[in-house]
Length: 303
Image (cartoon, rainbow, N blue to C red; front, side, top):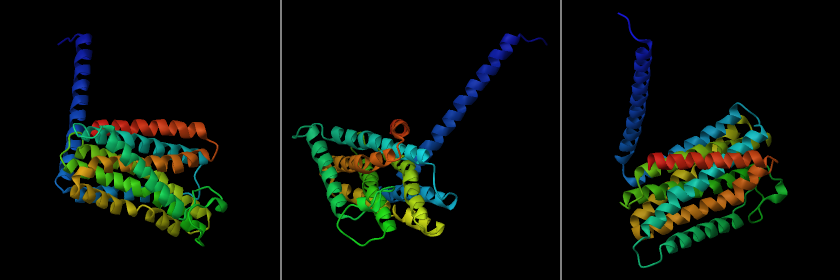
């Protein structure tokens, strides 16, 4: 039986189109299954799971020290820029924007809770930065910050990344607490997107700790252990953030903005200068752009 070649081609294209739609539908179904599974837990348990995930991603980044003693500086700067972009996007899409939405229809101006919380977050991180001894990766010993101490350089490096991770864990916990409070614009999907974004950007942070420790003379094992240890504060901060906003729901808009302010402080104080320290500013900037775009897509897709 003779068949028109054009008809055959059309049928083949239609078949491929249907197959693509079925694959996309299957992926969407799996995504909804993941969200449904996490929704089966309480907000504190959700925050704990998310915090453990972000810790695991830091550990995965720290594990690079097992295979490499050092990473190409351009790659590291791009990764740090990417981390900064993710945190900037998360600060607005996942934290500040919901804070503004929750403040509508209240006695105070819409912008007031977001403004107060954002500035308090930055001030709080500045106080911790002033007193906690730490040293940014790649910086000489004389640039150590915080109170005078006799800590070894390795401890100062770990302390610096631990400082980064506190607001990240807090942001994840507050996001899950907000979703449990039933506010419009705060969903479990959006909180999951934030956790995924934070987890992705934690990968280069883990490497940024373990690799310098290896160069300092520590063994691969010790470098990895100290690198992943810097993120153990994230599950703790996530649980505390979720529990706090559940216990005191009226402070939720302030808490979301507080987490955003703390994260922006870390970006400007730590990540951006470190990403430019190696003289690869253009590469770091493109990393920021890509990181922002990835986090924006994640928030829209899950939210």
